[in-house]
Image (cartoon, rainbow, N blue to C red; front, side, top):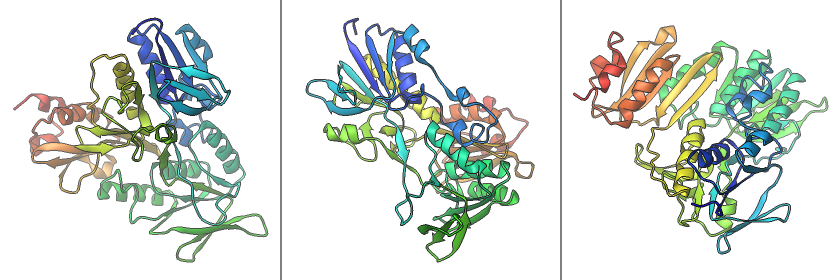
Length: 410
């Protein structure tokens, strides 16, 4: 691609930042516009529910870049601007400022937004969601003036906020509609372990509990009413019930969407000039053998790189194993792959000590890994999974055998 060509990246989050930096790193010399709705520079989201929320770290640690850095790279960063319309025929996008940008290639990194609670009283100002930096600021203020917190949702956001609220000394009740925590991303045994961590530290976890309404008492305190008729008092309520992809721009432009923009692993859509990456992309994952929309730090990075290279017509692939991580009460959980019921489980390390790795194996190959406080096991495990190498379970769990030795083909 030449110096007269233009690439517009819509969405100035982690994926958008990585995409524009990759374009320059790979030698693209044309015009690059990075358009983002938020006034802040692109930032990482993981600290928002942990160290930044409790005030241990300044929010500046989350920032990935700033205006000066983009200017040095010849990237036009456009903060506080929304894309109103995508016109594929004219290859242009209309901004909320009414400026129209023309592109030769377009990368959609529009991310996702918090799924909202649809019950009476759900618009109360002390009901919080945690997705953006502004959300973090607001929730931090609310928590500082609270004694009791009710959290709705037993996924990663809900659990991390619960751990942060307990660190701040607050009383925490967590309501989860399902029969266990993190049911979509964790095997049952690990869900139970995390439930144990939280109960040990005083979190009141109620499984199988939905919310039917939220009201305010005369004293100004919220009351969360459950589907079973139970009432839970709260000064602040936090909702973490999943995320919705911001795929409306693509849908309105006639691109195929289904829980996200449909792409291949490298972010290509049905339009050869339009690409998508990060939370908004629903792509075919070779390792899982199915389509998936991943909301993770690693996917935002990996797919942004792949989409930027694809936009430049460079060869590449994005067949990495999904990787997630979470930190709660100083315990770090890392997950490779997705839980599958048909697998057999083998454990390396000591569960009682709080440092172990669980391997889920199907026909001698590893399908899922859950490592708790064992970061050293993750790199070799990832390579074993990516190369679909057959493993001997006895050697896998033998701590005297370094995992990297199993990488040699047998």
